[in-house]
Length: 200
Length: 200
DNA sequence: GTCTATAAATGGATAGAC
DNA sequence: GTCTATCCATTTATAGAC
Image 1 (cartoon, rainbow over the protein chains, first blue to last red):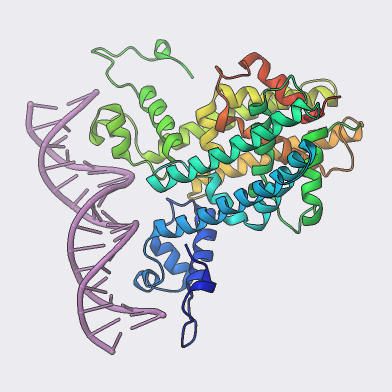
Image 2 (image 1 turned 60 degrees about the vertical axis):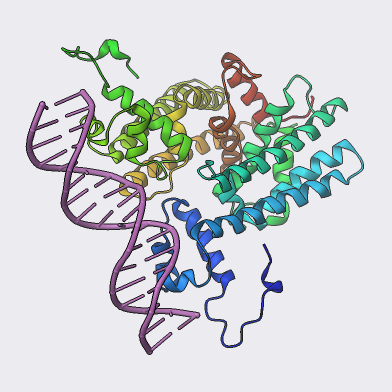
């Protein structure tokens, strides 16, 4: 899946470029749900006919594919960065901060990923990749437990899911202009996850 | 959720009763998504034709309506019970435990509620009811902050959303036969929310 | 690159026989 | 209470003119 840089530059006015279509599509998919959004809905939102839209993309599912690749690629890149850190504590904090960053910077695409139900081979493959990511996070939690950084009386998988339940919920409510500015968000989440709501 | 015992006894063989249809429908809606599930899919799952299915329910949306009423009713009842407790600490712990209980006991119906996008007047009304519930939880968090039970440097709305992100994620992964037995679940979640992952 | 027109399939829902 | 057959709107997607 090449990005815009790799594509042939258009001669005339760009008009509705592929990226505009993809961006609008992912936004609309998130507002209404992927299945509940028809190609007609999308064309209407863009002020185009369906036929014109199909000039830019091959299919509705292709749009989903591009978005999922972006979301999974972002999460996997964050994992690589976290794994490159030099202590278990930094690796765990790194993947939590990294996931928060990807969730906010690629909010629309990740939201789509988080709502998948596995209704097509494409979705099943994406869900498997997501599951691999989750397993790698669980390994980081387990490693932190071995160092005494995380309570050992909590199953590592359960701890991971609870923390990522918190993180993933960000796509449902976080707004950069809300009570938590973007540059503080990772710290707020990390503190809530590690220390909880109770004052120390 | 009454079992067959409470229903009017049918004369002939019970066949496919309304409750069976509702249960199967909600399960399938959760597996595939509400919009992605056709009435034909549901009929097939039940081993019926569409026509036979429509003998038991008026519409696809009616099934959703019944399920949402059950989920919202459960959450609102939990809120009333929590509000009846006698200290801010007990009220906050009460609604967290109560929500965990409702999420597990009415898992399918609550899952449906949590995935709504507001695609119809019915969904919009349900989302408004859900928002009212969230606001009442936020009030309990604010009250706990005033007593010094919850960190005051965290916005009450943000704290509520983070904790409920954790709680709501249960519908995605919690299984009674997993590492956390049902009777311990509320304690595990409450501890994770209040004290975090770090050993004290 | 956008349009009108249309194909082919599937969606939710109903009529009426048994 | 279940069936076959059908209605009509909408779905994804394509053909071909401009």
